[in-house]
Length: 175
Image (cartoon, rainbow, N blue to C red; front, side, top):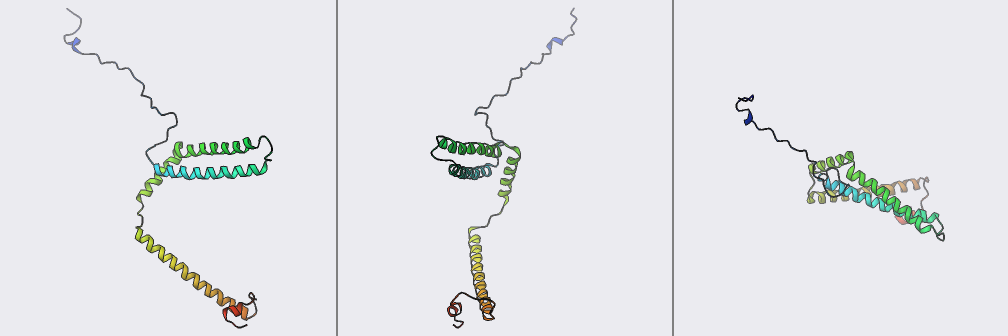
């Protein structure tokens, strides 16, 4: 007889699985934080930042070129080099802020989520409001112009204000 109880050999040993590493993602090492969220907010932030960076590089180029003598052999490398270094350095900072930094990206994602909740005015309401603003502004300008003329007349009549030559004749207040 055997030392093993009846039916003991019927149990199967569990399969041993070999832990395999997760498949690598291709596409390089520069990955965005939560790439599908806050897309438009990040995009327009990057566009605006890029415009400011290029504007700053142009201003920096002008400043450096006004300081240096154009006849020196290092004029072009230095002026272009400083501007290029500025673009690369600040551009890298912008990429880090817009694409990699978790805190700013959470802010962009939350901002885009809140903008989706805004109830925007219709085109008709915007046109009507614009007409009201323009009309009110023009009326206020006319009222203030008339009040200014009255104050000028009053103060020039009592001798406190000496108006420009021909002021009284121009507005019909005498000679």
